[in-house]
Image (cartoon, rainbow, N blue to C red; front, side):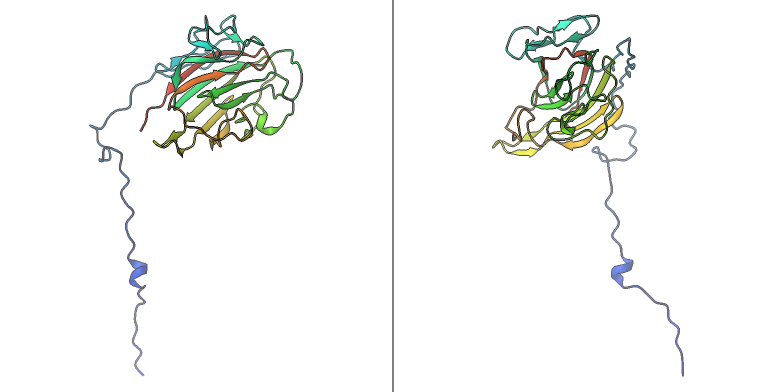
Length: 255
């Protein structure tokens, strides 16, 4: 009996694997030294509890520490909140304020402090809000050892997403929000083709990880409505004397 040795060969479908497609940058040539260089930006400096920091060199400063010339009342006329020593505070009953300039996709830095001593509990405790495009709220609230419903505490996308963690500092201490926001897009017929998204760091701790905004946050399950690509930033008067400082924004260009 003759035994013929042979080497097993896998079927052609197993040995012939298609090479993955090339991943190339938009200009088409990898490691091209003539490709467009990123713009040079001088980094800012961090804040302390006693001193506001310095924004990056390409940021649009929305509060200069002296006046509210970049802001107006949502009801028309000048912003009537109170400017103090390098910060400003809500004046209960004076209404919300908004930026005179409109913004779309952006990186936003906001610092805020809730009243000390604290007053009230639950939602009635250092309540305000930061609204990108005047429509999509990041909650401002004294949530330090003060329970409330999770999707309404500090760093929540109000009524939609609870923060991943509660990173609140005690009342009276300065806190920071660093936000990356991409606004919604609509087609010519007004149909939503890209929802808004939020990434948020609260006191340098990740609180919202690229969440998809479900719609406007000014009511219960409010749907999207067609809006311009850019709209003002809004700060909320919720009848609590919340303070703000060191507000700056960097626009993210279309890619």
